[in-house]
Length: 493
Image 1 (cartoon, rainbow, N blue to C red):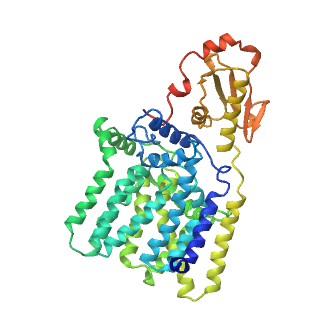
Image 2 (cartoon, rainbow, N blue to C red):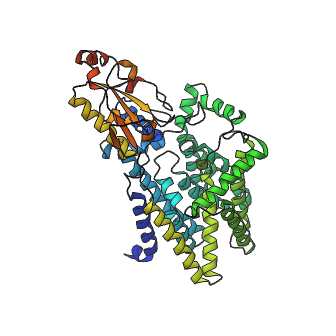
Image 3 (cartoon, rainbow, N blue to C red):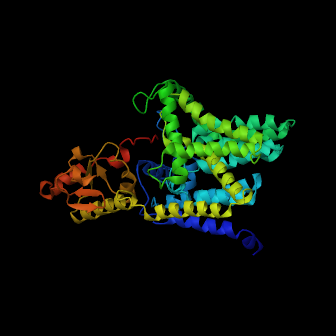
């Protein structure tokens, strides 16, 4: 009761964060190829008894993400009877843990009020809520960054025992979450230098031991496969691959990187203002940061680390030809949330402009929550994909087909995201050329002149039943199940 009385506002924020992440969780589950790969990994571990050292292949050929996120999903899949909806529960847990973590860290580093503001931002930001709801290995990026910020603070304050231990755990998790997080790893050394303390060698060694233990899957994989990933990372960093024509190197790449930074800062707080110039939020945060440093709200040592934290991402993605997407920059968000939270606290506490504070916070909370509650349902996601596969199975059984073929009429890449559902329904699925009855999945409906049945934005064209004799179908189904044997993009045995 004492804890509840002391943390009433935090508990309210946690409840709100949980509700926003669970709201229409099945209808808004944007199930696609990445989620299909998650299920395939779990199926490979549980059904095929294959202890995996790596997760899916990343956008850089030969580079894989670590397997930890996938293994952590297994209990949730089992609780859901292997239905992939179980994955969303783990992501919801990560999201709520992120809210609590921002409160704890910023309360310790600054004060309780700053912790509450930051936890509220994390709880209701439209961009963060749907980042948390996206069941992918990169979902814990912001959770990682806030605890890394705390480890830097501990080291800076001379608490090397827990600072190095926490940093060691986090460094060991980088491969399992997002390799871009390695960009801020050198800040731990800088925090130690700024602390002006003598190195406690034993605590430093404990941190290294933890890194080594958590990196064992990577070490085993690399030694077994001739350091494939290290070589692939080198190739990726030295090969020009412009995401947009003319933006691979130089000033054009800097502009591309900054445009994504501007977009991320705006989406983090004001994604509901579509007409807002994306540069406004970025420069407002920069000005706020300078003001807070000058007023000594942010200590110079912390400010120095924060500046280098942000510059590490901008400089790296400017100088390297690697393709860059918005989620690569999520590691910067902890600093933007810090600046916003401290600025709001300063308005409330130091300037005594409480009315303005409550107007800004209320406006931020209400419009973000409204956008979350009114977002259109994804009519081609989890529910529709599951329903269309269930219908194909039901229809094929009614006609006595021991197997079926599936064709797709859609844009490249949109045919992915179905294979786990076919395995989940225990279906034998062949390629259309195999002679089995062909069911055609269409997205969007406008791709064809007619569809037989619609499942939201997905359409289904049924087979020409009269073309298939029982003997011919039985013969076409006598071979291997292509759904199990065909290679799967991003998945390696």
